Each structure stands twice: as C-alpha cells, then as structure tokens.
Amino acid sequence: IDSPERIEALNTLCSAYRPALFKVLISWGHRSSDAEDILQEFMVKKFLHKHFIASVKKSKGRFRRFLEISFLNFLRTHHSRSTRMSRAASLANFDSEGMTLASQTDVPASEIIDKAWAEQVISISKSRLLEEGVKANKGDLILAFLQHLESSGERAADIAERSNATSGSIHASFHRLRERFRWLVRDEVRRGVGNPLMWAEEMEVLISALRK
Image (tube, rainbow, N blue to C red; front, side):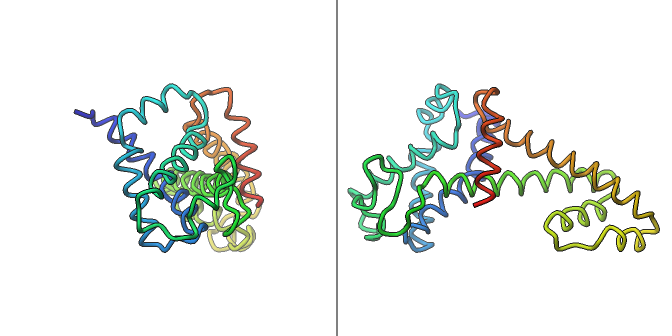
C-alpha cells in the first residue's frame, strides 16, 4: 500500500509535468480530447507505476529529461496498438533519436517540455511569494510587485501615492521582493533536481527556455 507521502509526491509530479506533456501532444497535432486520453493512460500505466518511480530514484539526474524519454517510448508503444492516435503523431514523425517531430514542428520535444517546465517554475514561485505576502498582510504589495514584473502594473510612484508611502520605500520593497522571488525560483529548481550540483545548470536551462 502506498504511503501518504508517496501519493502526495506523485500528485505533485503529475501536476507539475502534465501541462508540459499536454503541450507536446498538442504541438504534434493531437486534439485536446485525444491528448487527455493519452496522458491519462501514461499516468496510470507508466508514470504511477512503482517500477517507474524506482527507476527515477536510480537516475539521480534531471527528472524532466528522464520523463521525456519515458514519455516518447510510451508513445511509440501506444502508437503501435492505438486507433485513436492521429497521423500527425505517427512514428514517421520521429527522428533517429525520437526527439523531434518533422512534419508538425521543428521544435524538439525537449524544448517544449523545458519551456512548459520553466513557466511552471515561475508560476509556482509567484504563488509562493503571494502566499507569503498574504500571511504578512502585504498581499496588495505583492500583487503590485508581480504586475510590475510583467511591465503591466502601476509605476512605483503611483503605488506610493495610493498607499500613503514614499516612492523610495516602494522601490526598496520591490528590491527586497525581487531578491526573494529569485530565491524562490532557485529553490523551486533545486526541488526538481536529483543531483544538488546540477541546480546551476538547470537555472541556465530555465533562463534560456523563458527567452524562447
């Protein structure tokens, strides 16, 4: 019987990587309903299988890359017996290493997954920062900061005027929040790396993915 801790860990992994795998399938021409069916089968038959989790523990590397290879292998097997697979996902679309789809896109699956992963890391980090702000009764300030990060929020001077604060204090608060947000992003990256020495390299992957 699975322990509550293992079930929680699996649910977290499912939530983190399901959007990335879904984007891969959609980019290859699958309809949303077919992509959901394929993902559900992968999660149940492969991703949640005890042998898969055991292999993850032995890999000691990027879980994301391990998942990518496992997912592509699953698709090969799925294609050979499934009538629901569209022609866009045929084996002819895979290159010799099974990493690139030729007829639908020239973007490797690894780049699609990296991009979705990076966006997920940023989203989780923003949520963690907002949660901290709410607990400290600074939710409005955090929201203003997050909007400021996206260049769609108020100017610091406008925020200062609205909140009866000085422009300098708002700038100082934003500086502290920016540092905290960077720490949260790095912390979130560390959580997904089997080898702690790889986190700096993962940060480079994240920055590169977000720029594409």
